[in-house]
Length: 619
Image 1: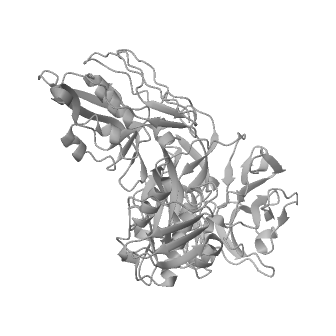
Image 2 (image 1 turned 180 degrees about the horizontal axis):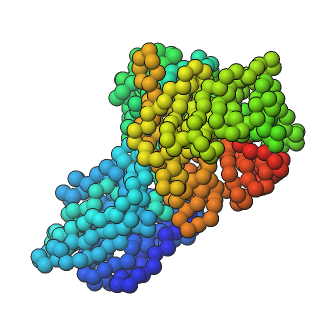
Image 3 (image 1 turned 60 degrees about the vertical axis):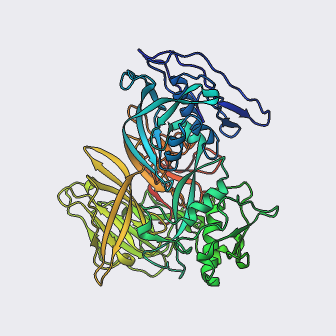
């Protein structure tokens, strides 16, 4: 992780060296420094991030305030302590008065600033004897709430910190903070160094069991402190239930109020990667079916936390007796984990405007071949298509963009009437590429400027239902539904530029379908324009776009709006469309100036054919 590089702009006072200790690898080198400081004036931003750029090796330990520390040292020391690997922020509390330490709640929220907080002594409150006030300022980019959910929130940041003199050891007066900022505040690079994203998994409350009869899982990303017992943290957050954004459409098999029997005891797998979790009495009476579903949630949530993963989970009742056992190899029999599915084929539209396919195995050299069924014959020329997740059906948009057709991928099918028609005059304003969700329903956007619509077709048939999208300002240009069917990615165009939003699918009750997309969250706020996107896992998307003043780039983003470090992809010229599988073992496929290309894991882009368009995976 690169450090935050902060200069000393005009008017900034000279800062002091960082007083935070570093442990590099196993050498145990503890570095510390202190300097005499004035007790007023401006300070440079906190430089806690200006350390060796080794995210995996550096552990940061805070130091307590020195005797007789000046107010600016106390403020800087407190802010630096917030960036340390201190489990309970015990060292940060040493910079607070006793009463402030009792009231201060670091779990309330984590505010993420672009370049860390700037401190300014100002004049407010500095005239009174034994009183000092500092302002913390910066550009806020996001907040992580009490549930550990990340949400983009670009805004100016300004908070005050007040200090007073209190009695220290031997009766000496010492400066301490009596009004700290709410929660934790730190810079973006410190946040990325300290925290990591983890997917919790819950059962999709709507629309119900999938075609295989199993209830599907939906990912609920949260951020945890990656060096502070991440396994126990993650289990606690899973037991606490879905985040507020997801809770209307997902539920847990753990009963409300379920917690660890001993929350203060760390959870550790044994030498065979078997984990035992003792719960409180809320789950004592769970049936074997329910218990195994609970265990499946745990296994899928924990599978990428440790290098070798958790192979087996044993759930215990509050008295220590066994509730159930589930191994990783049997978890799929309990519930489908759709992000682990591997499709058989990749698909695109060839130069004859037919839907063709090629083996999804990145090592295959087989030539693309037309699919079986009417959409592979060329009878109806296509400009884009989508294939159902079970790879039994397909939907195609006509070459002029006016009409949407569906058909079987088996032989003997004939072209039926169009399921949807657009009345837009210009071809680019007509139908988008369609998308199938994990329950066999079909989605498409009609981009007609006079009548823009997002449409849903139950089972891909019948009268299309117009989807209500009340909170989005702009026209839907592209749509991709996640495998769980409860989240939808939308490219929304306004003032000539497109941005990426993730909404929650709400299926109204009643005999007549009523569909809505609610609580949209911007998923790539750092990009000025997003031109293509695709789901690429349980909570991840691959996007094509550009930042302000930049060139086109491809990268992975999280559906909560955060960006994981090191997710930029090899460059490719003129990318128009991108497709990714829910399984990260499958190569990316793109339509670029070089034709249809794909990117196998650990390799470079490879050309499949020079002419073609609209690459898609099932979905």
